[in-house]
Amino acid sequence: MLYERLRDSASWGREDRRGALNNLTTTRVAQAAEEIRSGRTVSLAAAVENEVSLDNPDPCQHRMTGPSEPEVGSSLQFSLDWLAMNIHGNADSHLDALSHVLYQGTLYNGVSADKADVSGATELSLDVTRDGIVGRGVLLDIPRLEGRRWLEPGESVTAEALAAAETAQHVTVGPGDLLFVRVGHRPGATTTGRGTRHRLVPGCTPPQCSF
View 1 (cartoon, rainbow, N blue to C red):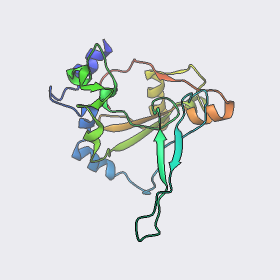
View 2: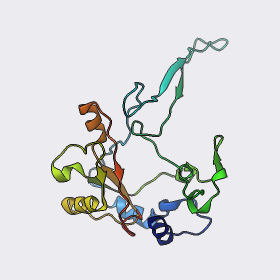
View 3: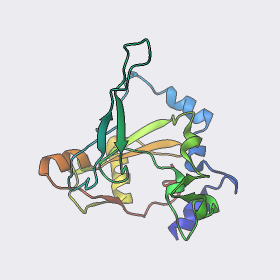
């Protein structure tokens, strides 16, 4: 099965907690840096939304808590922010830790599910990314293959579509690459006024899936 093939194709030992981040070796990071030409940076962040929509039924709640009382002998005051967010879904950009996904009752690399509960995670946290995630980024634009701006709700991204995008864009994705798959979610949802749900169809095989 796919789970077992992926597990067995990329094993870094029973004590590993970094997963695919192990592919970002110093050699590959240095090679990626050699491809920099313009130095332009592009944000992947999405604006925090605070209105209910099809894609965001439980939006961010925000209020100001302040201004505070000035300290004795000072006229300086601060207005503070309070935020409550359900960050998982199609609305807000975020990065998941490996402690967020369970399969057959366990977390990544056989870590017990009780290591993550309502109080937080004691293993598999994002602390492993504290030095940053740096590598060669590859963007595969799936709607562009058919001259469209976005995929329609319910459409899937298949392994064949990813391979076709590689060919069309004259690029090959390999181990250590940071793969970004564009489906046109945001312009589609904004233009049509409806949510857009897409999924990747399990079908790729190592090393294609071991990014």
